Image (cartoon, rainbow, N blue to C red; front, side, top):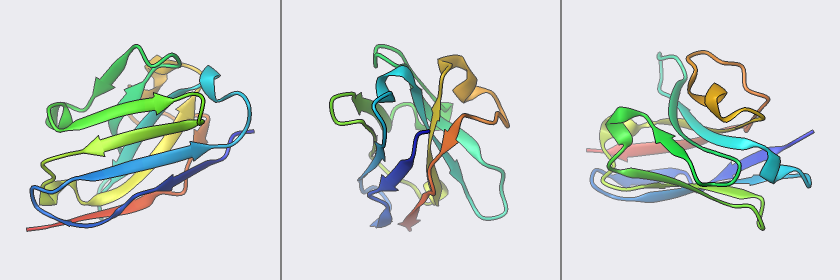
Length: 125
């Protein structure tokens, strides 16, 4: 069992930055690929970024690729999402996810192994 707890969300002006963190419980963190998803009001949850178990591979939603960076620290059981140049369209609840298979994290509507509870990110114009 893995529990994921996100933090770092908040209100920021357009063009600003936020760093989300997701702390995982358990001693098997390094065996899971990790990802970030988001869900805006009235929209479906969508993939944002993923990182492989070792951290050597990453992938991003096209619209965030040059602005967001996913990273992980396996010694701290934590995954991060650095978000720069934020836009109002980035406003959403951001969810951390863990899955035993890296490729599954970018499959639309995939049911990953574990989800966090979400953290709100609001970008004002």
